[in-house]
Image (tube, rainbow over all chains, first blue to last red; front, side):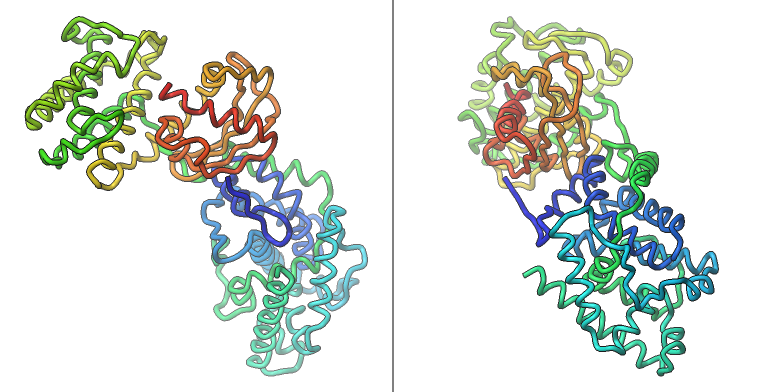
Length: 191
Length: 319
């Protein structure tokens, strides 16, 4: 009998196999484990609670509908959901032309929202979220500002460059360096 | 990584770089995690199962009738049998039988099937009708000492007669019948025949070193469904008393699906006491006693003792 778990103690291959086979209880389990991740990304990017709910719903419906396409050899389930949540949230921002409201929102993207994050009261999840925020905070200032604008702000490279007053090529390299550094950090956390 | 139907975006954007760096995206998402409102959970799960019904794989499976399933499985075996040489025919398979002997067994069973369904009279006196293997032993021994061309031609001739009659069963699927002393509907009899012919096709392919024949998804789905629904009988035959207990069976890969199955004969499905996750084809091989339950690679979530009981009961098809 097999038993495979990742660093967070979740047997992702089995969960994804159950999803693909049509086991709706697996979807419930994944929702309970990972909805804070998806909803948090959506709310932070859209700055709109109702839109974040819609994005969250859209992401989990897509997870359920196309679960056979998830390739865990290429990324974790959390990574898959994070990318999809980000993409859907950015789509929402762009399609509803909320950019101006987002810029004017009370909490700018460079500041951590104190209401956030408890990951369903799981101590381990809470610790992982703390480590993730610490990893972002530990980025060199230029990279951190660029990645915050690109990820939570949903900006294009051109917009990042304009807002930071740097050439677009520099904006790209800062974001890409930040992504590489954060990915390494996650791997180190998993070891 | 392509987690989504791409929304058109300008090329060379952060959104595309993020899609190539899911680990970084995961870490950034962790940093912004926030519990959603409690009411969202039910809404999301309802919307998901409205988009794709629970229990079914994401890609819809073409449904076929048990008649078509049996016809295709006989045809698959026919293609394999056509390639066999006289040397292949002497290769050992199961129960000490040669390939030719196994073909003799199948010939006798298809003859008996036709007689049971009223298509023709029994070829000879039937003794030990309740004994699937024993009743065919004379045919097995005869086939093992006969020229292989004659054995092959005899099997092909019987299969041709069966195949010719099969379409008539489409309107009789719910009709009850008795085969080997067991009450069957014609529907379940044909699925059981598909199961056996596929299993013996694998036996022959293994014996002569050929690729194993793989049933299409539609046929596998019929077989997995039948094997799961037979679990209460398997529990009964193996002496278990799973009063009021249910199991969630999740079969992965082609022909898979998810079932919540009561384990008590005539019982009603309740909250599962156990979830068992394994590959659909391997599950069928356990049902056919070609893979030992103890060797099955599977995940058991829940009561491990009940898990062992359920796995022991899976082999009911070969019982």
